[in-house]
Length: 185
Image (cartoon, rainbow, N blue to C red; front, side, top):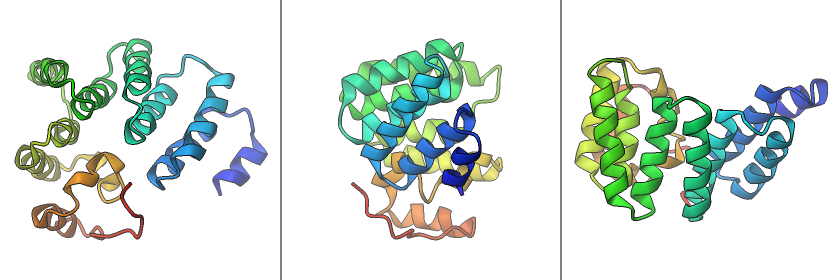
């Protein structure tokens, strides 16, 4: 369907970004990178493109590139909490714990004044290897009915939680499958 949408409107920024995002969720990282780079040719300053490209680079172990894209996403979005959380998780998974913790604390301060989804905090804690904290945040996100949870069972940033029975319990409590047939990479 997304390919058909691209045929109908090849210059649509949101359709092209969605194509890259879908490839990321399908763990087709090389194809996602190719699609997102093409999307940047349409509009080089769209924060969502940089955000997703940063996610893909993170999953492929290209941390410097992931951080650069994450910083572009944060800067071009005006500091959007989603973009900041993704960058914090990249710092965490890339071994830059101090930067991740600083960003985590900054987001926690922001959350005292504005809503920040617990799902974002779960990703950062997962990146830090703090699975107990990540699962607590996911339960809070579930209690708050965070819409981000619809991606939980396919979100590559949560792959390291899949083997935990508590993670499967969270999925089950939402009626989401515990396995999607996509191998973690």
